[in-house]
Image (cartoon, rainbow, N blue to C red):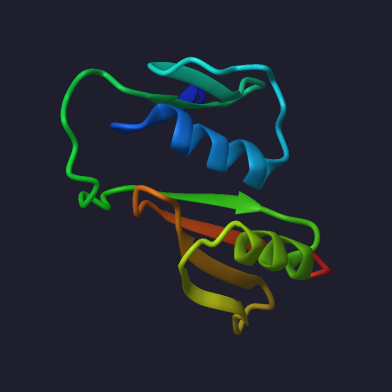
Length: 117
């Protein structure tokens, strides 16, 4: 068994989907106002409006993405205007992590594992 999809529920699909498309450098032609696939390989990332009004303050989920170049990823996040929670920080086990909020205040982590991993 594997995770098939992670879906971010939002009131504004286009705004949130556009943020993730720029962040993940995905141009898939998806432009629906109710549901968009962002990533659709083994595990899909989608953005959806199921008709429920959201307060965007639930923060019950975080997403973590592994990146190859943390400096480049950090500059991209800054250019997107995302609010930084923690800038790139080396952990005692060698990984470098950073965290920030997406436009709906979901917590996003970028991580780069130690070079010897």
